[in-house]
Image (cartoon, rainbow, N blue to C red):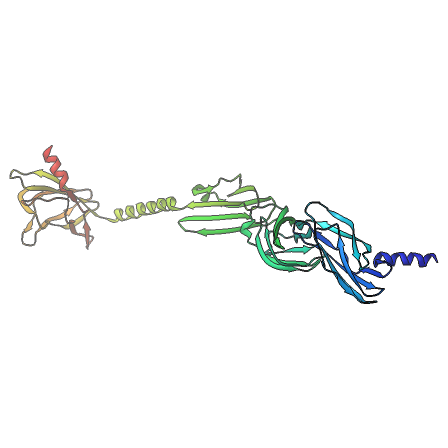
Length: 460
């Protein structure tokens, strides 16, 4: 008997039945919710059975501001109907949480029965939950969700999600207790500098012509990612760039080691300067140690300039080649030119030529040519030319032989009645001679004169 009694109590709790003399009420809905700031009513589904004769029933309460159905509903004898009762929240009294109240059903005889009901009273923000799955710095996408926590259909919801990692907006429909998940594409540049941890997910929700804001939590999990890249270019001026980037979300140590030999290190510069320099035999090791924060970059520029040693080598080679070439030359011709003051005011230059034999030579023929605009003065200094060809503007000197170390000085004057400005260049002088029966040739340097300098000398 006790078991039957307990079972009856359980059934009454699960399916409450309220009955009067001629009305029986059975509550069929559950988890009713009333959203006060959005003026969303609590909706109860009641199965009402008329046990008596035909009657008109009116449903009313003193808990809400208004309720539906507002009109009486006709019931035939022993007729059952499922009635949907909507009770809107009152604005003058603030409730929250689970609230118990009575609803009344009155028949034609003006007698009422009480129907005890319970409703959960909340604000709009308490109806939703937002959040996101855990994600890492190398993630391209993240799953976020919004959940309807109550027994109510939300249609045409506008949701706007914002976090340090992304922004997202969507128009959705949410059935009771429904959870909708969205995949949001991530741009790594937006959170390159952020460290691991928990971040706030802000949501702005427009529902039932009302707006509310709620917050969720996102977990940015730890991951150590240090990406290294290297770029090298140039041969004579060799530049190597080493870049370390912390693409993770935790502080990560970075160590960079560069090896140089004892020669290349003399011509190498670093930016920034290394933290450690160690020498081992002919090798030198440079080390950079740095802790990189998320999004932080370390850029090392190593520049080796081979231009100076290359120029030094080329200069040494040139000196050696010139020395060898000079040592092979049996005859040296040195030519120079000087300005002279002429009585008639003409432009005049004195041309001097020194002929020096380094070794014994014979049958020496020195040939010089006059510039096109110049004339030869009849006065000569040193050796007198053996042949003057005015038509071809050529002068020649002959020497039977020259002993080793012997020098001959040749000089002559040229002039022009036409003034010359700028650089005045004279042709090179050529010498043809014999050495041990072989005909050889030598050439002088190219002499020149800047006419403006001569003019200044005259003024002085």
